Amino acid sequence: KPLTDQGVGGVECPHAAMPPQPANVALRVSAALCGADAGGPLWPKLQEALQESGIAWSPIDHVMLGGGPPQPWGSSGDGGSDGSGGARWAYLESDFPYAPHRALVAASAGGGVTGAPSADEAASSGGAGSAMTTRFPLVLAFEDVGSARAAPEALGALATWLRSAPRPFGAQAHLLLVLIGEARSGVAQRQEQALGLSASLVRHGVGSVEVCSVEHASRYVVQCALSVAESRKRRLPSRFKVAGVRCQTLPRDPQDRLRLTWVSQLMQLAGVSEEIAKSIAGRHSSPGALMQAIVDALGASGAASSSSAGARGPADASALADAFLADLEFPIRGKKGTRRLGPVVSRRIFQLFHPEALPEHVLV
Image 1 (spheres, one colour):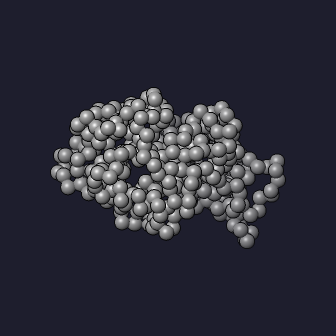
Image 2: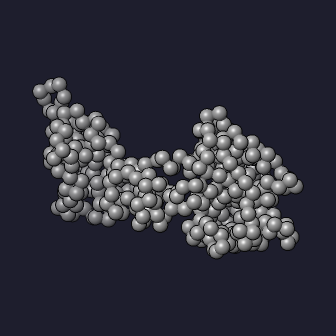
Image 3: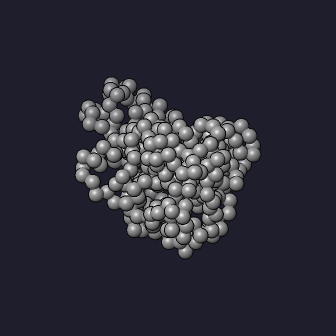
């Protein structure tokens, strides 16, 4: 999706609002991007953005990398004397072990860890944390959107070169193609380019982003660097982010944490108050118990298990969803009477905890 005048993702990101001096992240730039005769308007804008944000930069040592990128990604000639070719590319380098947040979360969940280590802590503790870290979080390749070499073979060759020795990026190097400018090509050409970019993503793990101008491209690079710098302080969330903050009448008994968490989880659903959540938890003591009750109800009614209640299925499945918890009574806060839950919330809960819940019914 192209970036708007407000910045990345439509969110305004003026340079004055950027955190100063992220000295633990630097940008290494190819000679074709920053050289005196490189040409093009990208580098002056990028250099200005880097200086305003306090991000250090330096030319890439192509000798250390064993030469420049392979053809056809580099220049159509035989490249410059430094071996850089004609490729406009750069990479971020951090002075700390970086790990993608989603990788840390996945590792934490897989190991049953509910704590919240930072990237530094995960790396220093060894094991899976150190295996997933890198000091080279992102490689960026720049192309004009009208002349982008989007062929999967070209991007695949570049990705293979980056991930092989003596390059230091490793087998998991993340390559992102930055397409600059507004597309003025025809529909057929745009479709061909989109197919090439999609194939590059699937086959070689090469992502892409479209920006409207060199100013937006510069801002995007700065935001990537600042995000890497910020990741050093970011901690993993707990398994459940809401730990009963809205639960006003449940006792804070350390021995009753599971019930408190279950009630808090139920309260994330629209239309489910604390009193309703406590009544549901009183009938079904855990998520597993609630899911099993739905399975038993489906089996008892003869509804096809392959027909999720949220889809257009048999009438009896829809009726079952409406009636599942419709008769559940919950107290009215501040009054002596009770009220029935009704079919709407009953259907919502049935759809969410159905063993074959549809994606549109899953809370994110």
